[in-house]
Structures are given as structure tokens and as C-alpha cells.
Length: 282
Length: 282
Image (tube, helix red, strand yellow):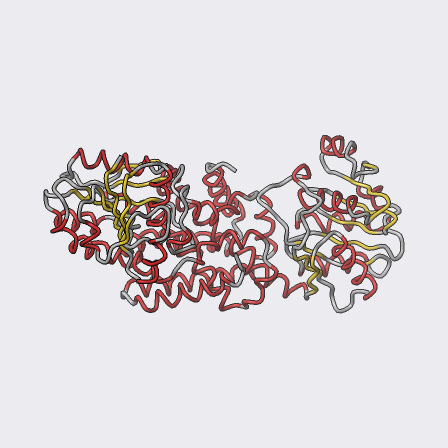
């Protein structure tokens, strides 16, 4: 059990970390810093929060483990602020959707006093805000843990146990490989769904009322927060563009087959897609 | 109440028409013809079936209303077979996902003896087969009814009441406009989801195990039957290619904004998509 778990800037994921940690007895004491004053006030009254403090620096004092739950562009700046206040041997992890640059910079900022072990729980949602958090959000979901070769092995083990302790299934991968993976399984689907909605908005939005469950499902993630996604796409631009190029090539191949009425080719591509999708189970 | 409802070639939709018609007391007698002998045998024992017969012609005898539930390429050939056996003033409808050509040809085949009023219930699923049918499949879902200007007005009213009677919300539109609408809200999403799965299958299928609920939802319809979709894409090729072109343009615009790091443009497109998606409600 951790003596003190500190959570900085809780949104959906940070709010869920606090709830899950309390529900599963992962930490004796949970300390939270929230950027907005009104959030801080409401959080102070929650059963999964032992103290709300006024600054990230103060929150970092005495922490066994700090979870930086801020958007990707705010993670390293926060770590820079708390670095001088961290106890020797303490742990820092995050929930950022992109890991390459953040992992390298956070490691460099902390040096060998405290240990940064990046993480990315695959438990996002089109919902946002700490209020939407849930103690069961991580259960059975992948949490990437992305150490560098030089990351302290003991720290990697402890942070992995922390995320497992919240119910997640930990997958340990290199930070750059992580970014390539999520470009394909998360960022590309986001662009595909958003582009679809953008086209339909431009065609005739009223047609939406005729749609069946298929369109609803296919576009659900397009309801996600554009500002959050802007920072993710900024951070993972190159990998996202590579994945997007593959998608454009695939659509081009579909269109070319339609153009030349090559129905066997169309069917073969649909069948390959079905095989892949069937691998998820029902 | 219809005296005799005949259903030809029931799959998911035809099987659901029979169940819903029985549950809601829409027809006194339900007669079914199934192409495959083993399906015919199993259907004969169902409480929503009063008789299974050996040929479409026989099934059409004495029918007040015939639902042709076959795939789009088999609809007109079936109507051609049953035309000589239909009583004067009887009604024929279908469940085909594409309506322009089918509606015109079916109208021409039947002449003025019986009346064809095309329909398309937006209640498909990645599930298939009459066994998967449900009495509630149409409840609250759109059912397009697509008369030609020359279609008998009384027949249009009766077929519309039939679909409303099964729980659907009827939307009456011109057959060609229907094909343009579904190219956008149904066929394009299918291609977008299938192309996404096809890319991921080609990248690294094992990454699937890391995916969150977002990818699962976004790709659900890619599990649909490739052969069924082949016939739909064949039938609606030109409208689908127009919609696909818009989608490709949108993705190109996203990529161009990413390339020049125009984050305001990226955010604006994501926000337009979110606005559209939010219109569905939760």
C-alpha cells in the first residue's frame, strides 16, 4: 500500500484513479491538486480525497507516487514544477496518450532522485471531467507502461503494480513503439470517425435522424473533446500521418476497385476487414 | 389486419417482419418461402409462421401483401417470378438497401395489376439470418418508403401503414434521393469502418488486444457480411463513390492541416464533427 498517492489535474482518468485507489485500498492517503478553484472545492468533499492542496508543488511533498493526469502538453511542465519537491526514490507516472517525447523529457527532468515511468491507460471516453470518473474504469483495460532502457527497474515494477492494482492489464512497451501502436488503434480511428461526421455535417445534417445504430456506433468517439485531441495529434503528428496515409491508400484501393467494378476485390477487402473485426469477439 | 402476409427469402429482416407481424397482430396468416430447404424446415415450426411453401409463386397466391426480403440483386428476379400469380390490387414491398433501379424495375414488372411500394427499414445489423430476427427490431427505427410519382397513392398509404404497424417510423422519400442519403449515412460508414479494419489487419493484428472501447465501437459494422455488402455497393456504386470522394477530400484536408501544423484548422474540423455527433444525443 502506498503511503501517499498524489494526483495532479484530475479529469476523467485522474478522477477514476482516485476512486479506484480508494475502492481497492491502494493508498493510505490521497492528495489532489486541481487547476480550477471550483473543481478543487468540489473534490475536497469526495470520499476518495483526503486533502486538496493549493499547488502542484505542495501536492508533491511526501508523495510516494504522483499521477500527472493533465493533458499531454501540460505533463512535462508540471513535472518540472514538482521535481525539486519530490522525495528521493518517489515515483511519477502519467496518463498521457502519447509517450515518446514526454517519457524522455520527464526522465531528464527528474534525473535519478525520483523516477518517471510513463503510463497510458486505454480507458478514455468521449466523456470528460473528474465528475465522470469511475472506480471500475480501468478494470480489464490495457494500461501501457513505457519505460526507457535506462529507467530504474524497481520503479518500473512498482508503477506496473500500481496500475495492475487499479484493475488494468499492464502492457510494457517502448515509448516510441507505443506511439506507433496508438496512432493506429486510437488516433486513426478518431480521425476516421471525426472526418465521417464532418462530411455528414457538410452534406445534410438532418439525414442523421434516419440513421440506424451503425452510424451511431461508428461515430461515437467523434463526440470527444476537440481541444484534448488537438494536443494528442500535435504530440503524435508524424505517427498519425503515417497511419492516416495507410488509411487513405486503403480507401483509394476500395474506390479503384469500385471504379473498375472489380467486385471480387471489393469483397476480398470487406472479408479481410470482417476477419479482423471478428477477432474482437461479440 | 392483412388476410395473408407472405415473406419471401427471410433473413434477419424478413424473420423480424414475421415475428413483429405476429406479435402486433398485423396479419391473420403468415406464409413463408425460404430458399434453403433446411431453413424452410426450421421455419415451419415457428409460432410466427402459418405455412411454409415450396416456391415463391405458391407463396404469392392469395397474398394481400408480399415482403421480398432477399438481397438487392435477387429482389427483381423474385418479383418477376411471382408477378403472374399476384391477385389484382395486392401489394409488394421489399427491404432492399438500395432503391432506385429496383423500384423502377419492380413497378414496370407489376404494371397496374399489383402495386410495388419499395421500402428499406434502417434496422440492419452485423448479425444475419432469420434466426437472429426479433419482433422489436423495427421499433422506433426509420423505415424508408420510396414511391415513384406514378405509384398508386392508396398502395403507398397501405404499405406505409404496414411498416408503421411493425413499429417503424416511416420516412417517405424519392427512390434516388434515398440512395443518395444511404450512401452517406450507411454505405460510407460501412466503407470507413471496413477500410479501418483492413488497415489494422495489415499493420499488426495483435495490437487489437490493446484497444479500448472506441475502436470496438468504431469498427463494429465491419463485422457485417461481405457478400451482402458487395451487392449493396454494386447497386449503389455511383452514389457511394460520390460520398467516398467527399470523405477522401475531408481526410486530405485533415492531413494537409496536420502537415502544415495548422492546429486551429484541425481543432475546427474536430469541433464541427463533435457538433454533428452531439446531435445524436447520448
